[in-house]
View: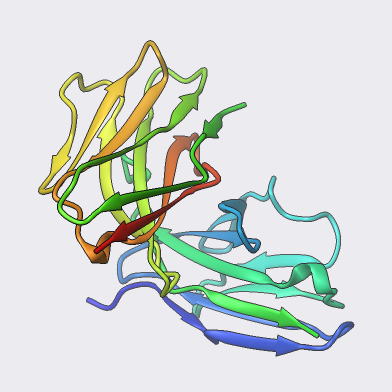
Length: 115
Length: 112
């Protein structure tokens, strides 16, 4: 049973470009969470999605950031017109439906560098 | 709002010794879960141990154990017989409805 997969592992973009980060949850998991980790900081919640639904996006910046989790395929975190401050590690986590403990299984992260 | 505080940015311990990492979790929820995650240089987030708030018994996992003091909002992690592979960032975290809130982390170095 493969774990949570994220790609790419490393992504370099110039200011103003778009970044697309992908996350494939563990098999059988229908809940996906995105977190951002700035250098020397802990993880900060961004968004929680279920298939075709955004459940909680209270941690998402109001502009330039969007997320989706379509019926088929991976979850996508999209950052438009990236700026240097977007440079961070972006982690995806997944959990099965009705997870009582909210235990989330993390992917290896995507490290975004904006030049 | 839930808050997670880790007051020790950095700690070190001699190999084979015991070290305790501190955490406080402030929440208005009556039932919740607490976690310690380890993040080694590879950056992978690894679940170390989990505690259910309604359970009085402290969780243990091999060399790792927690001391959960609900009234004091304290959730410390004890690592016994420290090994070089324990060198990592350690994040305390707690559930908050549909998400997990993380503390700022403690950098632990195990010295040979």
